[in-house]
Image 1 (cartoon, rainbow, N blue to C red):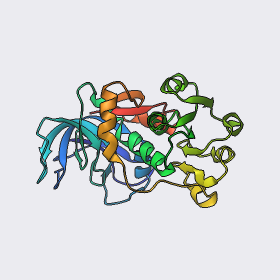
Image 2: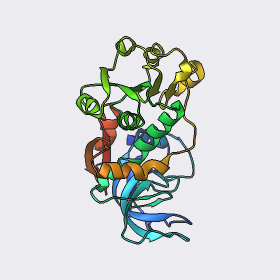
Image 3: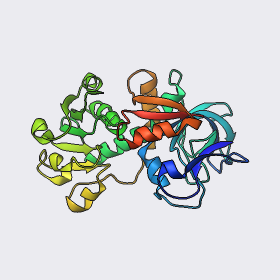
Amino acid sequence: MRALRFHSYGEPADVLRLDETATPPEPGPGQVRIAVEACGLTPADWAICGGLHAGELPRGIGLEAAGTVAALGPDVTGVAIGDPVFGPTVYTGASAGAADQVVLRTWFPRPAGLGAVEAAALPMAVETAYRGLAALGDVAGKRVLISGAGTTIGFAAVQIAVRLGARVVASAGKTYADALEGFGAEVVPYGKGLGKRVGSVDLVLDTAPVGVMPELLTTVTDPADIVTVSDFAALKDLGVRSTDMNLRYDVLGEYAALAAAGGFTVPIAGTYPLESWREPLAISRSGQARGKHVLIP
């Protein structure tokens, strides 16, 4: 089995390598192993290479995957060998989703009409966006700014917030401006002067790269009206809030069904063979990801 993993911590380009491993991972109680058809990449993968969630080495990357069930762990019911599924991976072992096979602790059926690539792009973006909006509280009828709406999390958050009844303002560049407007959002360009362009809002979900917080603070009356999923320094220094740790994977089935019906999407920037992993890594690290990058084992 091939697995993209690292044997020491450091820069991903320096420490990652495509290994051949003797046996695939064994699913434990309540787990399944899947033959991976697609693995979504996220900035968290690169952070894990640098020591986030440190543990015994070697370690793998790839926090989200889609494929077909290849093995069932003890006490697993309701799913059969060969079923198409997707979900967040078990990534704390010697390999993860960027491999030929991976173990899932939480999984959902892949609806007809939803491809493996599109399914693999959902877990991290949907879960983080939904949890961030939940931390804001009731957004129905409120003017809500989604900062960084061109990121995969922000793009998902705009769609979710509109479904929850918010009046959404989305800060984004030209790449996805038309799509965001099509969802019902008011789109404003990101960058210097963002606060003046936005004006006053009730709540802010910040999914943008670090640096925009001073502008966001001018749009609200209380820093606690801002929830960030990216600017962790602001949590200590500026009084903005973070999400809790109650992960919201429970909504993935709902949003997969919407995606299969054409009612929800996470933009796919590119797909790559597993052995070409350096290409999406370089694009992601350049800050120009412009959507989800997906490995195809």
